[in-house]
Length: 255
Image (cartoon, rainbow, N blue to C red; front, side, top):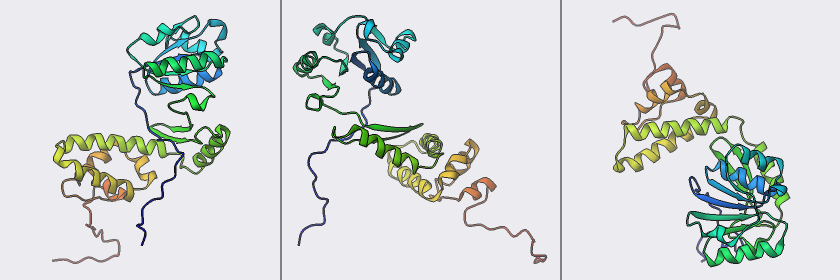
């Protein structure tokens, strides 16, 4: 009897969230494609260097340069541009296949990860179509087969998401950071993960989005006894599982 394991489907890519915060990335080119690459990098807090003749800059790239958001060299690419030991990634977006392939070869010699626009065989990584809502990022990739299809699929997925999901995730992140203060020890790790998972499952997205800082403090009181009070219990500051009779039925027991 065959084991019930997932079937291997070759031909895919290993989709990762590459942390480039405060890392140097070289972008070669200054047109529309380069503008998109630069925006993605700045959103990820990378340190971006752009090499391109000023005559080849589009308005958006020129704006980033004017705002000092990137380091800019007004010239064509030179092999010495790769000598900077801080460079961890290279992206090319130039209309010169021969020059692009040469840059690719130079990057391989220096073992620098590179993406050569519109040349999938000369790419260590690909860009997908990304939906962004605050801390939430969803990427759809077709492994270079159909960028437009990736965009269509991404839009369809985004249309099914609640409008407030980004805000809910932000609130969950705040709660997690507060929980680490309440229970900082490494030995608390498994309990922290399990407790946070239960909060995310038992509270609705609307509850998480509406959660305020004082609600978080109240909710965290239930961490030690490993309980998950409901949203209304937290708002009313009730003990989980306790119901208080308010006499609304018109009678009461007098002892």
